[in-house]
Length: 315
Image (cartoon, rainbow, N blue to C red; front, top):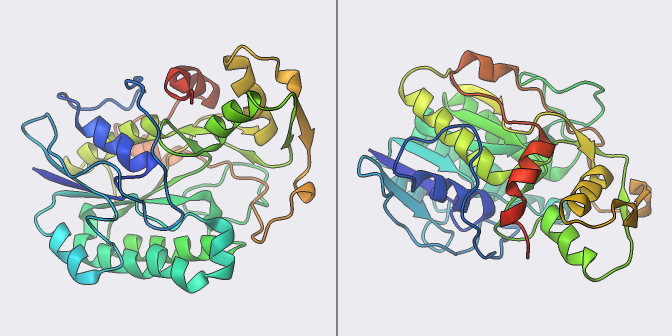
């Protein structure tokens, strides 16, 4: 059986590759990986890091392709890569939210047009990763999986277009948010770095979300793929985010606590103090009801995952 990962040089792609390298089927319950060094990620399709490789499970041939090995904006290359794959994980994406405002065409080429080609080639074999930014952030309770699209920025619009193509082709969409992990830059690792450089930090406390460990998401995603292959998971949209919610300020304080530092060093502020080209949703909490239609469990509470992930996150 052949499993393909696109964007395998990025944070989630590398964790999917690591999970699929396990010699036994993956459980959706997080298990800490061995700490690894960080690799840079890119706001355009994920930059090169690991090379293509085969899983240590002899039943699975895992083709993990970086941007250098598979440019998803090349339709012919995508069709060739997808041919013969039983499962396709698409983690390649334009993730520069502010850059999408000034270069919407370039963002759409990766997040929409390329995904349409991929969806047409892979159909129900495709598991595509998306974002909370397809919603407007005005809700006061968790967004259900079937909530209508209402993106507030160009990045969200391109991701919604990609989702539509995947769902129309009978594939799977996993929306995630506030992702952090061992590979590449992310909020948690940035807080740890700044904690060593500054006496105090000022972090916004008016955006609500679900900090999610990329390795745990990779485990859950692999479990969903196994369930899909066994006809035990209906196609459609799922939400791969942690249980519970907090603010960026609350997450930063939790990071300080895990590091044995004084969380009072993290001071609250509001988003209007940090104007950005692209508006951000103020409420990014996603519901998880659809997992009940599968044998796969929702992810644990964000605080539980942060504690387990922490040994892998230090710079």
